[in-house]
Image (cartoon, rainbow, N blue to C red; front, side, top):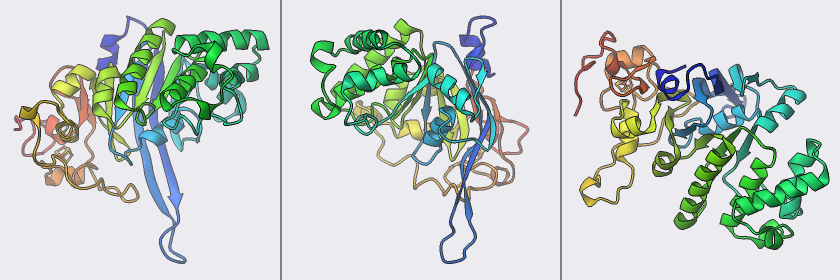
Length: 346
Ligand code: SF4
């Protein structure tokens, strides 16, 4: 477990989410007839742990492996290697284990409409999970109405409506109520507020914060929006081409990012302050293909500080010099052989 999370956790507390060496590759057909299959390195050895009650924000550009990681954590696809444990129970692919996982961990997707069955009323959609898990109908209905009220939707007005009869923001509130109906300990949000208008987004984020306190939840929050992640997260994990490049307490990582990729991402954050606006793109081009990632450090083809050692050896996650964050960059290791290692960079 990283020092970051040990500090934030009560003494002796077990991690709520523990992930060790998680890997996933996909085989894709090569271009052209008879071309050999290629391998997409989607998630390449991701490890982290998260204490109960914390929110882990997971950020990175599209194609960095965030969504594959989400599907692995939910058991929606099997991992090639590695271990996931939620509330002390190891995830495996057998049906009983997956059913037990659903009770502990639920997910809220980006597309509020696609994730609801258009033929089920809101009440039926929210009651569905508890009913599958054996909750009697009256109890499931009472739970549904309590949750609707809690997410700001009057059950008398909304329970009998269909998904197309409510707004996008209201549908996402329904999805949140549906996720909580199984009384999970962990909720995973995959770009869950990305499709909402800004004014609705902040209301939903505040609701999520309140619900976390009230129900003692632990959140995994995947987003490409660095402002949203900063607002909601205790700990932030930055991914690049299937790997973790930096992880640390949100306030440390946003104030003193240690990895060149994290710095570039944060420099590209839109700022309301005209003094802080960047005129040049701090990071150029798209990430390389995960089919054939660069050797050594995967960020080296876009890094302004790349040196020969960066192509020869993969940097390990080490303590960054400031504030409890960890980052994977040869600049942070004075013994790495990088000519700028240990020096202050502009
Ligand atoms: Fe840049 Fe090298 Fe650090 Fe990678 S290891 S981020 S290429 S300096």
